[in-house]
Length: 472
Image (cartoon, rainbow, N blue to C red; front, side):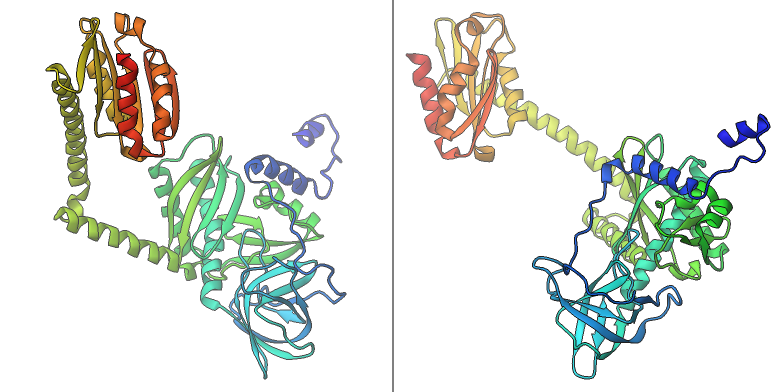
């Protein structure tokens, strides 16, 4: 805006300085990521020895699965550092193991030598060195034939590439104000946080998913380039830094045709079609104005489909209907269940009324006030319904004490409001006098109090205490 205003005023030579777009993107990202601030990474090995930077092979060929390299260092991990089972950080001269970064998990695999073999349980990066977190040491100078867990790497690449494609689809479907506020890629699923002024509907997610899968068929190849920062800023501007502004003078840029372009140092497919399929499973609200898209792609998308099919199959068998009839059948059963629950509650309340209307041990009258003390079955909601039934009629002033053994024991006390019952008795005082018998506590107001305990075996004593208290 300032540049445009300046040109209108005749300042033709005014230009944005190098790095301005990146700094603006970083500021914007910090605001959007306020709910998910990152913490500073602590060292895994203490002070690292001085070695040349590990040569990363994963950018040269993302399909490379094995390599040969020399062991430069075998460093014990600090206590409590690294994943379970990892004891040493192995530094190699070069590696095609991708270290955790950019929201993508690090690679797993193995580092065999002529004499032994170590499992790589995680891959991290400190400074310019790639640390292979292994289940044991290796000898310095050994030649290793490293091999990554390709199935896992492929799944991570599926999800990482899918995040870029879904992000581009979201901007096209929901209009360009969409901005990436965070992302994470694991083998199970990927998450993409985007800024948006309202919650997303299933129709929104379906439209994004459809467009994302169309891109898989339309874009034959991704474009990966390394540009000087000033050139990247000039060519792509603010939108280049959707995932945050990377450090350094050179920017690694991923471009998926005209669909999406971002600065990203992760591993991505050369051919988007290798993903197979993308599913946008659901969206959740991270905070006001930020929606989190849950994404599965590749093998994870197939596994998700199989699991959903199994759920439908089992549910169809339970209801003894076809999958096509499941929605209306489930709706019918749910409606009937609600009606039955309502009817059960009415019957429970009626049972209480009948038990307390004809005299007997549960009900007595003291100076014109009906006293009801009884054990019933039910939760707090059901007890409340019963109390309302007992204390509704102002023509029959009532003090009711109900107890239930559910969930460790529950007690509720109530009086008929605006009657001699509420004038004579305080529900809170009565509750506090008897609830210690079930090792609990509670409170409320003078006409309605409730509480719970941890010892349902004391309920008989609590109700007996109430009878003695009210008859004294």
